[in-house]
Length: 314
Image (cartoon, rainbow, N blue to C red):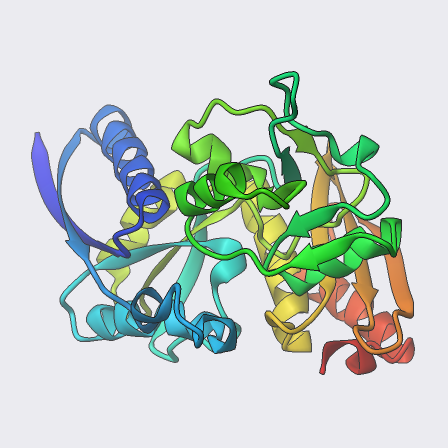
């Protein structure tokens, strides 16, 4: 049986390590069964600017690039072969010498509400919160969509990795609950009571999708990564990321972009809120097999620009 080696770069958070491990386990399994190949792996932990400033007063000023720049440097320098990211956290401006591919099956893409434990030992529900409930999140999208449901909700900045956020919630005397991505909770295997917010919040582009980043000229690594790429996830990722990147949507934007699969059709929803005026844009469009994903995405972008979406982004 042939053998190959791959070096994966990742941040050292529990979620990042879990995601890199999941990628390697599934890639090694399919390489052995379908390609008669033993895949040996190494994992390199990389400290990013985001890691260094997490928990400081500068954390709120960080861009998405701050969480991957050092990982991209290691990739381009050849110290690692591939990096594994959460799709929603990848900036539009990735290094020009790298490529992206979505990997594995998409995890549940929506947000969830984890409530404070009440006097009966149950966690509070989003659907039954008091009018002036205090909710923790650092996401502008989650804040504005929550206040769209109830303008009286009070939102407080709530940052940190998933275990830290949960600890802060349980230690808080004032928080009613926090909002997280369900994908992160599922991947970490945390068994905790929560309420899904599928009917309230449209997720960020590529939420729930894991993404591999590799050097553009590294055909060997690309061939390995493609072993764990699924066509339906690739289509959704391509559509969502193209729209998000074209709009230059970032952490300071309130825009949800989600492509759902229903049989052979893909249904795309884009919902944006203007942070200054609270005006909204929402469109729902269906894509059918046969046309280009990029052409369809460009049609949606043209419609969004006709509605002056740029005023919602910056």
